[in-house]
Length: 212
Image 1 (tube, rainbow, N blue to C red):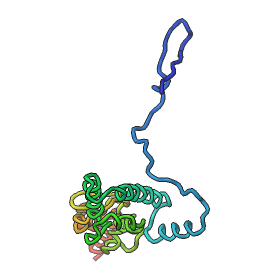
Image 2: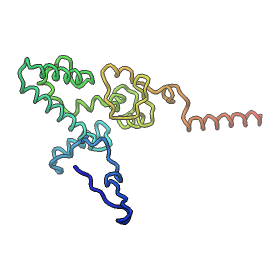
Image 3: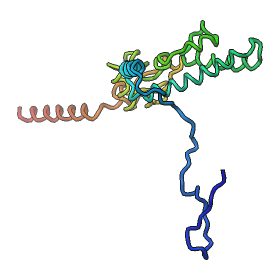
Image 4: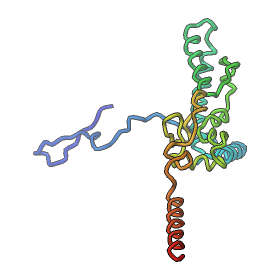
């Protein structure tokens, strides 16, 4: 695509600039989700609403994002299944795809075949979200409380504090989910309200001692 030029001053000045230099072009232009083709399908709307409540999602766009990723995975698996069993591309790319899914805990180790990849559902990926894992490990009172803890930087995975509820937890990282060392829940500094109450209680105790 050729860029057009235009003059910013009069014709005698011959000051010509590129039209595209006045606009910011994002380097990340690829789509991350796709909206449903039929926006008012009753069955799909009920299913999406159920997932939003069950997994504490912010909006339906999070479901569409996972669905878009899952459709790409299924498309790759279907394409590989059309090749012969001994085809080098099927062996290399198929094993890489299966290992990646097993690593994040979406696919079981006893189902390491491309046929099982086609049977994956959105719920399988939602189960591997950090928000879901924090709730299932008992670190939060509810799935919504888990999201609040993550957004307020109370949760760490290993040594790294993660504040993204949609973070996909790998199997080897699942046992390292815990409260952050700087969080009041993890033995860190007490919160603002607790410090304020402690100071008020201390000052009240000093006043009672002075009266005696």
